[in-house]
Image (cartoon, rainbow, N blue to C red; front, side):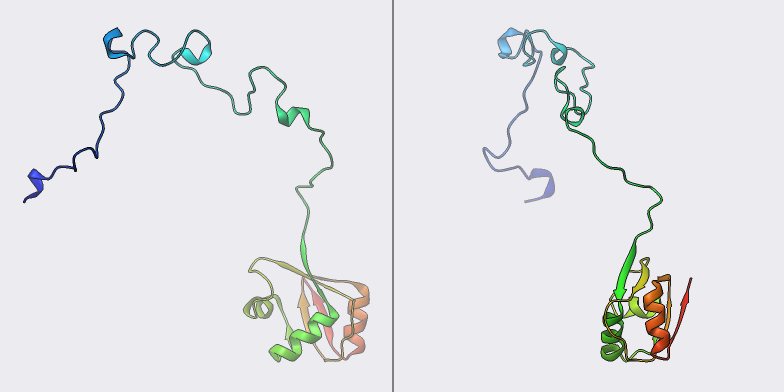
Length: 148
């Protein structure tokens, strides 16, 4: 057996439809396109979402709200979470790089510290934003906050 005499198994292949080859083929006349209408003509292309003239679904549904293209989304970390991180990871300096290395945030996430919970550890916190109550609590615990 060689590559030039390989053949598929019997019944494994099937010849394609031969369309528009006369009436005797069984696919002559309209060539499987039916009668009249846009779909029977060459060059037919339907628009996305077109429903045959009926008002399309995306136009029938009510529109609500507004999504600002300038929205800045932060990953919120409470003081209680910072305390937990410093205990588990043994960190005294909280930075986005350290949080990323610990698997807490994703690479390009912005971090904001919020003032919920208690903080007893003395931490140096360098994040993108922090609430006033969080800054007060960190400074009371003997730490410092810098925002970028």
